Amino acid sequence: MKSITINQLVQQYSAEDHLVVAEREVRHILQCAKIIRLEAEGSYTVIYFTDRKPIICSKYLRLIAERLNPKSFCRTHKSHVINLQAMKSYEEGRGGYVIMNDGTKITVSVRRKAAFMETLHTYAATLARS
Image 1 (tube, rainbow, N blue to C red):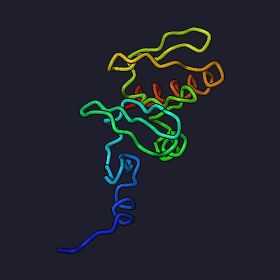
Image 2 (cartoon, rainbow, N blue to C red):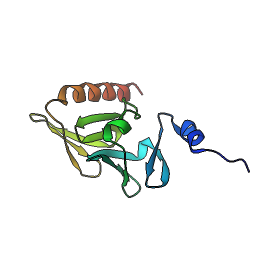
Image 3 (cartoon, rainbow, N blue to C red):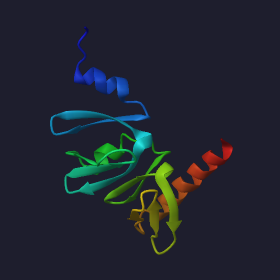
């Protein structure tokens, strides 16, 4: 049986539909469509899913967010990135709030609201075309 290195595994699954992250000594190959949201907790990131318990990754949120598809994922706050596919609704306000499919209420910061709205409109237009 041929052995595969971690680097080869990461290369193989580093497409827009997968994300490889480490939790302790375990490398997880995650389907991006099953990610609901990501939340910063200091220098760690908690990743929440539709079908499993959250995992804690020892990478900054910024570093993980850079590897996600910007057409599907959006930074709404310094401590939150959401999957637009898992968004239930948006409540307007100064910054506003996003309600996720799992019921979580996520703040949209005033500073990120314009970029969020632009990403949301682009995402909605993409859905309308398909």
